[in-house]
Amino acid sequence: MVAGPISVPLEVYRYRPGVDRAPTYQRYTLDAAPHTPLLSLLLRIRAETDPTLSLRYSCRSSICGSCAMRINSRSRLACETPVGPEIERHGRIVVEPMASQPVVRDLVVDQSPFWQRYNAIEPHLKVDPRHPMPEGQPNPMTPAEVERFHDTPRCIACAACYSACPAVAADPAFPGPMALAKLYRFVVDPRDAAHQDRLVRIQTEGLWLCLRCHLCTEACPKNVRPSERIRDLKEMAIAAQGATEHGSRHAVGFKENLRTAGTLHESRLVRQTFGVAGMLGQLPQGLRIWRKKPEVLHRPKPIEGLEELEKIYDALDAQEKEGGR
Amino acid sequence: MKFAYYPGCVAKETGRELDMATRWVARALGIELVEFPKFACCGSGFVDEANEVLNVAINARNLAIAEAAGLDLLTICSTCQGMLTLAKLRMNDPVVRAKVDGALRPLGITYRGSSDVTHLLRVLVEKVGLPTIRARVKRPLTGMKVGAFYGCHLLRPADEMAWESPEEPHAFEDLLAVLGAEPVQYRGRVMCCGFPVQFVKPETAGRVAGQQILDAKQHGAHAMATPCPLCHISLDAYQGPAAKLVGQPLDMPIFHLPQVVALAFGATPEEIGLSRHLVPTAPALAKIVARP
Image (cartoon, rainbow over all chains, first blue to last red; front, top):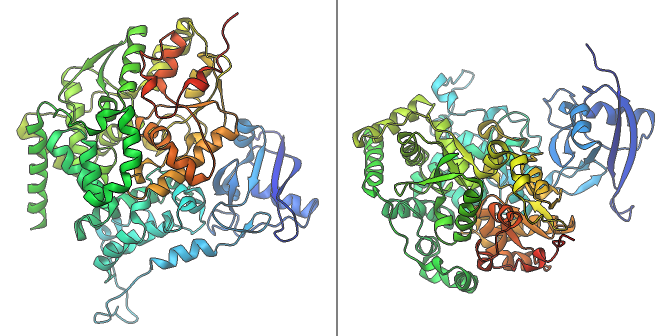
């Protein structure tokens, strides 16, 4: 049975930089069936009410990635967002342009920052010039090799993950979830010749700024799961080069810390991460914390059965050596 | 009601006030917390970055300890909840399972996957139930506007954590309302606290934390409350630097989840360690309207 139409109140971000003094939210109310995609309503507004409403779209089928926008604060594709559930949850639909990119007009953003950060880490195939790909012939991969890509080749570059990412918003040095997921794809691509170089470079090019908040994985319309691939890259980067940056030193320090006590020894971990000299920068806030929470300098009591933990570490190390042989 | 109590390492050290408040609430509700000195730290997401299989193995051992006692685990940290849940899911992968079993078996440890892992927030809302909690409220938090702050790993990845909508959760707000407080709706409540990069690039962590506190403040919150002690570190212990980074005073008291429950049940600030917070909580408590 097809559901009858509902009333859909929309509040759409309108802004012409350089012309308007500030952005405004224009209200429209349309009747539509609950399953109607938001994009269809925006296009109806443009066709029937206001031809100046600017937005980007193309395929209307979740393939081209053009119509990503913030819909009730979530970064997602307008073509695959039915209006019914939004109205049920929020009573209205607030439509805004994607975050972390300057607005060109209304819902259209300038994607240059997104692509600049992407291009900076070169997530494209780099073939060894000494072993060029066979001209005019297929260069097949085994199913096992393809499986290592996970779902990263499904990315449609819609930038929803970039718009949803708090690290992108807070730090221009973070490449963004899509760029890193794509980088992962080439790190495991058997045809790529730059694996090691990529893993070394990315440690200083923003890998460790990922907050592992998984907002990208929730935003992605194609289930690429960037946060999980970024985790993979972190482990691979440590394996390739060791812990060279604050982020990797913290991860490896935490792991070693746990082996020696089974629980966290906070002050030692800070020292492992920043080094003795680097700890000076942490000192003022550290003292403020210590005044309220003197345990920050405590040496925690090791857990019972710590030797079990040590044996688990050793057994897995041995397994890895065995497997690597 | 009886659980294997998994406090996590922060609540045992710098976040002791969280442990104090948890025990207070558990006593008030007759929840028995069984302690296991053999529990190891969950790895806090950092060990997962360094070595995924090791992280699963450490947590499979934790889970096996509770299983051997026939108990489900109770967590009081969004990150512990996330890591233990993740370990259970990863143990369904035969390759990971074989590696982990290979490390645990010689120690006589058997992981079965028979114990559930549940965060205190979920226990309060779903197992104890809001009517029971309502009946226990002695001093409603009427007049205090509180912004719930969930902590990423309680909600996401949503298909793995399998609980509330990661965008529109409501358990915490429902609980706050039953305690008499006014829950504040703001986007930041499901965002990140910045903690994971606190020791990578403190400025970035501070900007992320400051953004969420500012959002709560702009929506009228007198205080925020979190079910995650790592979020508490970021939002309370590092609020000073965060305020400088967002360029405005924040002065936002940050409660741990069981502290707000204990307060409404009649606990004194001393009993739940409020003096251990860096941002004073008194201004928020002053908003509570005394009952006529």
